[in-house]
Image (cartoon, rainbow, N blue to C red):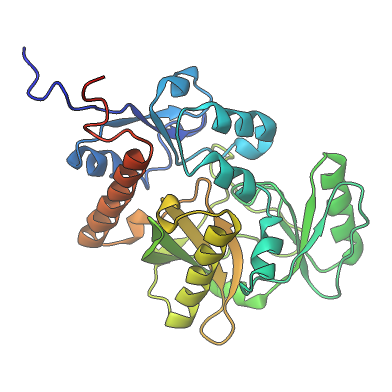
Length: 312
């Protein structure tokens, strides 16, 4: 059978999950069809499958075990031919010390103390959250009202070779976090993440694979002041890493609080859930289309567009 356009290049695209979730958690189920409608064919693989090294493009989507194998994961991100988001972005974003960079750039960030392994940990008065600086899915994060218990948890994390973050517990988290989604550097949609951490001293409940903590998600329509924090965060990343906005194919900015004093809690650029399932069908298909368009733009930047191999 003769191909209709043999000169058209069809890049091999992989959506990267992990061994526990090789096809993700279902939120990205529509992305394969959205990509196909742009003439792009993709399939899922765990990130550590050797076949990912043969792909023309790998898109990080559910690599939620990376914190347990960080050095191996970062080496892998540098070894695949092309990665979304890029290895440079991943390197910067996997360690939550990036919060210091955002704070210096003027982004309103939840007050955070960062303590490298071996540093003396300081716990402020009142209820606090202690978490590892490198983690995914709320692993290792706990609330404390007793300073000695908080210090013991920090010491246990240090003993594992993990740097520690200490943050005052903001009671507004009881209303959940607002997750602001950007696609191709542009505002897309938002959803609400219900509070994950249980009462002080208890660990969050994880889903059956143990990969991430259970989350209660719902649609959201944030105030302009909340969206402003998201835009400030994206703008700061672009400046810190010397990027073009469209190089952030996807980003999720998690914010607590309403219009009076919204604060960035986390900025997710590696493998964030993007809340597609919280949108109605029309909005979801539009968001998935814009994701695919952002991937299409990345392929052009990488020299992997449909006519890139003509004449080779």
